[in-house]
Image (cartoon, rainbow, N blue to C red; front, side, top):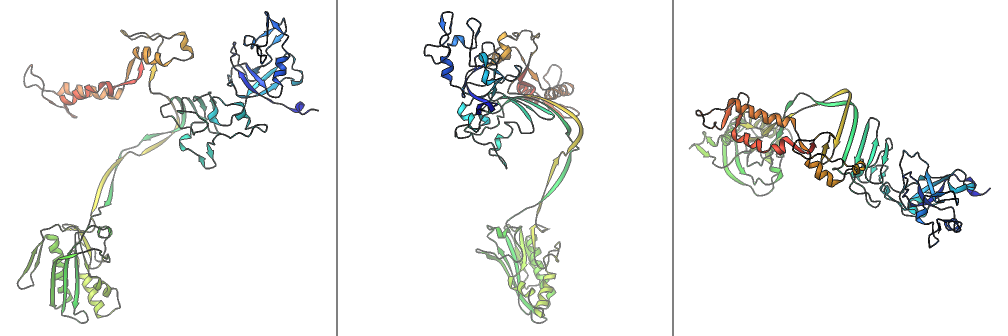
Length: 531
């Protein structure tokens, strides 16, 4: 038994597709037979005084392609019939690879019972045409040809913009030889024209956002708008701290008094991130140059409570813009004329080390002082002896509040259908309608296979009117009615006043005129047209 006797499919290359009967017949050069021997076997056949072979003896004459004769008995030996029903037109292109099927390949009498099936392709980007060698590269008998670029890896598409150009495995598709197709999903049908700008086997296809399409969908749910809600968002305001009040007891901490110390008000450089209000704390180490704009030394103060009163007066005085130290003789007063907010007050780093050190007389005195030094609205347990004054009479970091309105989405279960027709320009045409004073739509016999672009941009555009946007027209009419009902005149036959005061809103002549000038672009949709 020969190896060919076991074969089911054979291969061939398409050499012509111009079937004069449009029955999807093609001419194929079978690869398993010797083409020239078949041609030479016909050299003695003469029809109408002419040899059926061409002058070069390389094929039959073109006038005999697809022909059959009884006298003499002759039929084009390279004609193959479509194995698919004629209602399914899947005609390959010239030079495409095709599978060949024979009723009985060893007894192919008259070479009539021979059929073809469109062969495989090496890349989805080769839908329009692919040479036979490239197609055979996907078969065991194929040549070692560089395959087309892959579209997907196990992690998804190599180019995210390619997703959707071709059907997914769970769906069916009918592809054209170019960039149009029909996608059949579970509850959805898509008809798409020019879905991608270009199909080329060497580059990734991308979605054409200006494609023309028809979408028929049916969903098990739909989204609707709920009741509008408003929320208030709180955000902290980060600002540069301008001044720092720092205090320290320099004498007397080891006993019960008297106590001496110093209070400084520093102007901060206000440039680094460490001096921002949301970063600064009592432990922050300041880098860069700082200088004191106010220094007060207190001497021999009897009790810690009195020391706290002095420090608190400096803090509250800085808040008020005037520092009054009434216990001094003479009385010491300082007006603060430069910018002072936000400012921070805290014990010196040395004082903080004592507060965090071993328990003793010094520890007792310092921690008592820290609990007494505070701005009236401060929370001492959070940061004893320190705090931020973000603006006058405002303790703590400043907050901003923003109101945001949103409409929540509601999900409604059910059976909901949608039909969407989309394109750059849409024409809705009635064969029996004509707009008075406009040309009639010319539906020619040649249009049955597609209306060409010059006709669409010419006769169809000239014979149609723009569609009206309903809500936009209603808004314009509301303005006109409001002005009509509520306008006033100075007296009879004078033009109306600029403003018409209605019950719901105020309409002006200027606004009405402005909206009227927008009629062609706002009320009319000139890209959706009807006759």
